[in-house]
Length: 298
Ligand SMILES: [Zn+2]
Image 1 (tube, helix red, strand yellow):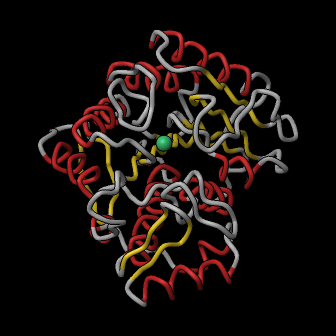
Image 2 (cartoon, rainbow, N blue to C red):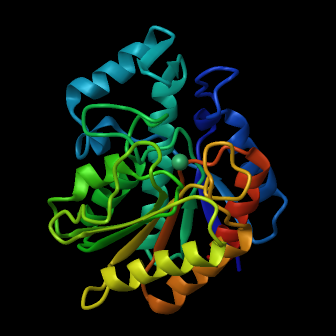
């Protein structure tokens, strides 16, 4: 058995600068490791069409991204920076997410989108936190158009996905569970931010035992799905909650991502899972963590 992972070569061409932590080497390390794993099949997909992004983002914002990238790049917002390849990277990344959703929806197995730039900080009309387009919500809306009405998004990136939460917190068809460091960037994600009862935030301090993070995230997953069963599960899979990440203070190891993935499969044996890469800033560690998650999807 193999698990399919979807990517697009333009995801490696987006580059916010040589001293920027969101480096192409993050995805490069992941793809290199995946290429040597017998359990993984890497598939290159077609780029998304702009219309798929309009389900989530405003037209003027998308025009800003396309035109800034077309001019060779620039600073979109603080440390969120485009180069000449960024717009094509956005379309390539979202194309990979849509292909992963189609694959999982068709019953061909769980899937993973190996993409960058990341997405969970992106708002409808604003990029931030290295994120340009909210890949996971674009994927969730695509799944809903295919008939998967109820969507669960689990976000284990060390940062709170403020963009994801903002895009779904008034829509009870989506539920969002996020484990993240607090206080930390971007400052949102308190436990009392509940949306319409569909947001389950798990803010925790740094340096705690990994088992505590895992168990507390799992308790929130269970709470979010008591009496409510998802038709598709997305994992906003950042790997900056791993010990040693330069942008986080959590302590997770690859085995914890494998454990969480196995727990998901046991609790939801009939529900397809689509993982997609968010953050993670030590490239070799991103590869280790992602491959542990992906191998547990087989
Ligand atoms: Zn992050």
